[in-house]
Image (cartoon, rainbow, N blue to C red; front, top):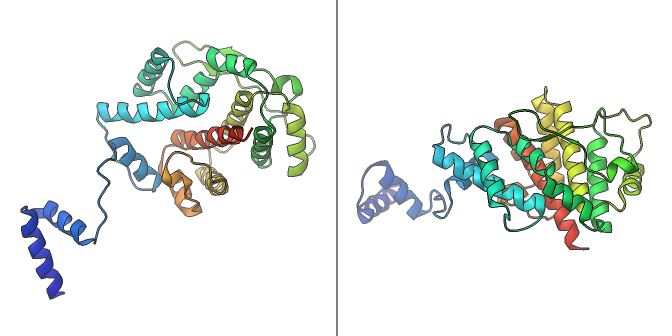
Length: 291
């Protein structure tokens, strides 16, 4: 212990500073604490705190909040449209402004997939590959198997984008069709085969939209019970971690149930929704690469 104190004193002299900051520098130098990576942006540090189940900074400046929102929105554009660059800068700026003014991530997401650009991709893109269709059917089956009122898809409905409504003063949202109670419970294998039969020939953009919408309906079913939401979310994350798909952050790829359950309890539900949607879009995008 005496030797440690001597080393620590010499280290403090080496850094030429005083107080807590100096102690932290010294402890980092000696390897007793791990410093925050210097190349992390404020929003990445904020996200890592959130994903680690820690309390994020309670108050963000307008500039920091806008930068954080910009990062999430950029990710949303990349994974939803499955491309690296945001083509429509004007559209992006308008949505970013809405986020900065308090719009929800769910509302922004619904506005994007209800937009004319996404609808055009749904109708003009080639049919999804067998790998995409199988991945979609398995994930949709997982959700519907634990829902009280899963959507009963028809071949016609599965191939077309839903109608859009434009409430005054709000971002366009999809008018969700009322879910019908499934009369006969099917086992998972039967559900997968039925979904493949219904959605065969649909584009990957249709598959992603349908899966995202059903996930949001699952959230709506359980919105009064955060424990149920957290349990479902953590199980989903752990299962998807086995796919070895990169979901954008190292902590997102971590297959630790308790870690992600705590995250879902501490962070806003709107952010949890995006974490689910992000995984589904990335997962189907990856399945499409093995076309």
